[in-house]
Image 1 (cartoon, helix red, strand yellow):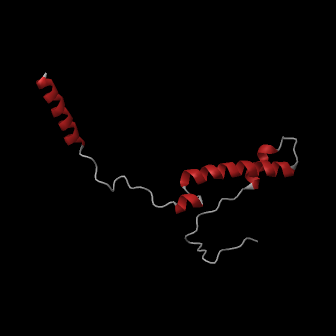
Image 2 (cartoon, helix red, strand yellow; image 1 turned 135 degrees about the vertical axis):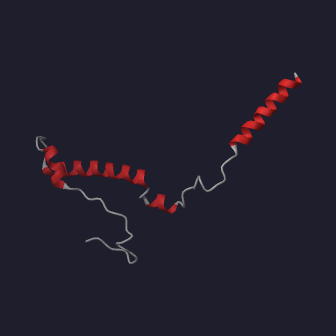
Length: 98
């Protein structure tokens, strides 16, 4: 039995991933290993897959408590046209001085 935290809310809880043994055991039918070893291998592969999902989607607790993601559109974008024009003017001044 798993312990449920006192502030657990099933509506806001992230989805859980479970192993569908019937889906993966047929891949190991021809192997000469015991059922226990098949289960261990599937669990190891499942753990690797879930780790990649955690990394990609930020469901790891450390990723959730690190704060809000930066909003690149929240800051004022640089005025690239004015920057380019000022650089062009500087280059023209240098050419005229020579």
